[in-house]
Image (cartoon, rainbow, N blue to C red; front, side):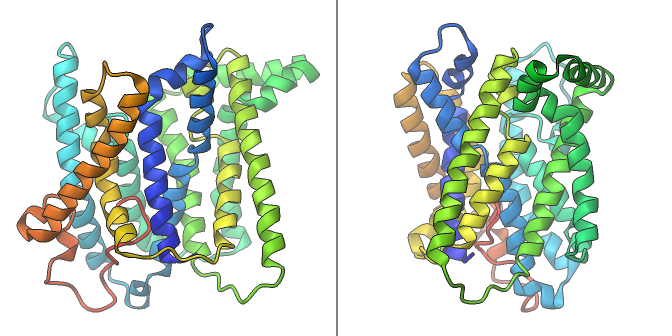
Length: 385
């Protein structure tokens, strides 16, 4: 997988996320009694882009694992680079989200401790949790890079995920839906155990346990995938066709899982979330397909868009807030266009004026750099670049 392809994938994936967040009111209406063909079309497109978050986690690990910095790795330089790239614009987005929460929910407790909790969990706005999650993975990177790629470590990484799936995910998906018909007593007991666990464990703990068991192995498998050296392969076209067919089947399973959740009476948000087994399978097949692609869509435009995509992710929800009241189709188009326009404008200012760039995530590009091989590339294929 080459840098040009990962840059393009990041641009597409961020655009999918912006679309999903903008279309959200019509997407969740698919579970209602008045759902129309439009709502189902929104749901299909939403589910088609669900693997975007897993792509970013995998590609973050892949980019860091493949980078020459590993030949003379320096933890201090790594943390400095990531802090300059991520934290300043993240703090700006977090502060905007905190201010809006205060304005929208004045009855809630607010103060320094509440702001700090939002900093640690990204909870001040719907999307910022993922940046906090990335920060924790980056903090673990000096240790994770030492983890050898072997079967024993792969099993250790995935055991918590399979346990979580069995207790929390599968009781809400297609397996439970069809299982209640095939063996009602057994699967009803399984579902009852699931409900008990949900009542015992706090929503906050469930949420971050979910993030951990999905994100950690995805990130590490990206690290390990960067160590794979592929030689010239024969029958590439046949393999590509088979993977393309597998991707269609995997997406069909994602839709089956989604609609099965709706059939169980579960809301569209929970039924269609990122963190579920069918989406993992869908993402894995898509990644395998990308590894078999030979194209390298490089160029200054792709590189610029890729670099700006982190700002798109951070600030697009606040543009969505400004667009309520407009027809959904017009709002979606405007939000996507304006999010990219704002991000590119900020990126231009940040690269043109270094002092401004310090606040916009361009501090890692300042002239004073650490020793060769210690810094990260400007276009590392992660969400933050």
